Amino acid sequence: MAVTIYYEQDCDPSIIQGKKIAVIGYGSQGHAHALNLKDSGCDVRVGLREGSKSIQAAEEAGLKVVDMDTAAEEADLIMMLVPDELQPQVYEEHIAPHLKAGDTLAFAHGFNIHYGYITPPEDVNVIMCAPKGPGHIVRRQYTEGSGVPDLICVQQDATGNAWDIALSYAWGVGGARSGVIKATFKQETEEDLFGEQAVLCGGVVELVKAGFETLVEAGYPPELAYFECYHEMKMIVDLMYESGIHFMNYSISNTAEYGEYYAGPKVINEQSRAAMKEILGRIQDGSFAEEFVNDCKNGHKWLIEQREAINDHEIEKTGEKIRGMFTWIK
Ligand code: NAD
Ligand code: MG
Ligand code: MG
Image (tube, rainbow, N blue to C red; front, side, top):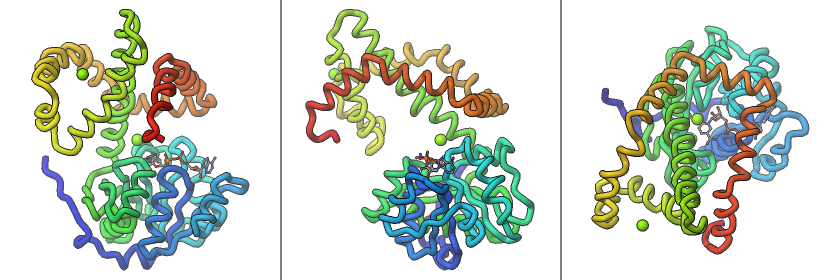
């Protein structure tokens, strides 16, 4: 299945520059979208709660800050960048009452629209512009003249030009400098959740931890185990990212490459693949979403327990000590 990739010449900057934009939230994505759009010549206001810690930071960065209701009232494009689990309540209380026919409601992840936790009125556009990278990289690349690629999606096209608005928004945040891919809310939501669970966050952390524990339990010094199973990860992944698996294989020794082919499929084996299929199934049928939302309602009890467990793990204490030795790692 081929995808179409759009670049700056495919976008009409005047669309986004002609809109009044509200960025709701000023966290990882919020600060990046607001600042990039402002630097792209757009009319941006950041909508924040009274007493929010982010007010000062946003104002010091030269942004206009108003409360969320005012932001939604003034704007004709509203980008929702508060945490996914808070969005339904923020939407009901502060955004929905101010939506006018022809407005555009935008997201950076499809969770709430796809699983039906937010149902906007039919006369507004519902679009997504999801940078495929953390917010701080979205901002840094923009200031360096580059951009993090975006996925753009349209769930509701009330005005007939929702795709052009999404493309223009992607231009404004800098994504069109490196490429914008059209997708659907369903694809973005399910693939994003699967990637972060099975590979990027869940998979990587557990792989590194299992390797570290195997060496330490066998009596090897934790510092060396940390170097082999954790510290070197970035260098290997950087080679893959920059030039492909073949180049990473060319750069490592033949011994390492032989071991890769021999051991990789034993670690990520049929059982691991079956687990991945099950994880994807729970994402597709909504049971993961339901479980996550229930934990949020329960004050993030399970999430916080897990976070504390990894923070207390020997691998983190070892890492802190070792990273302290390297002046180039901030
Ligand atoms: P975040 O946790 O970094 O920031 C959320 C911000 O929301 C806070 O900084 C604050 O300004 C505001 N906020 C917090 N609690 C609030 C409350 N109770 N009421 C109102 N505002 C409140 O969030 P994020 O990681 O930037 O995620 C925002 C959206 O972007 C999500 O939909 C997420 O899935 C998506 N996304 C995030 C990333 C990422 O790099 N973090 C990448 C792609 C997409
Ligand atoms: Mg995600
Ligand atoms: Mg080695």
